[in-house]
Length: 235
Image (cartoon, rainbow, N blue to C red; front, side):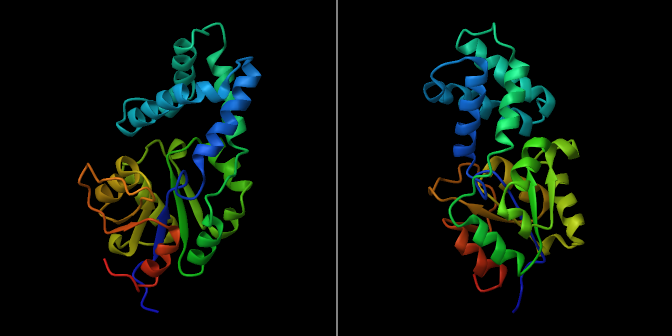
């Protein structure tokens, strides 16, 4: 086998784990704890605020510790419930999210196959407690060689340090021998470009590359990664 890469740097949310379903479950638990009715109806309000907060984190405009509380402060203000403790709701949400190990269809089997070819390092812009909890509750944990989590690093993708630390964990020094797999252009693919690493964009919905970022491979299914890792797929 003429292997093209020596390490796979892999995003977690919406690449391996079904973050949409996990967020839905955790948000319902947090609302119930706070005495808020209509979690399903209110989820889009929270999701829009949360997405904006994570984009701000990617730009270096907010820290993760502030994000954890601020997103719920903004959510509670938006629904007129400032009487509720945002920090307590945020802590409840994070605890619940850490118990949501919901893999995407076929993801566990895919990571198992990849791990037989090369080390797989998870690189995620997640909260440490949440990501460790989800990984420990998932079968995926058996097949990864390590994790790099933004809260522990003090930097978030697209900062290239995230990928550089993951390569270091795998003992890989040649950037040409690393591949970054992820679903987010602004986070995963931009990080790959900043680190000088090949990017594999997991794009199941066929979204456009509006940012014009360099993408070595674009895939619709995780099953397509196998041929890339074994050197059977063209660029």
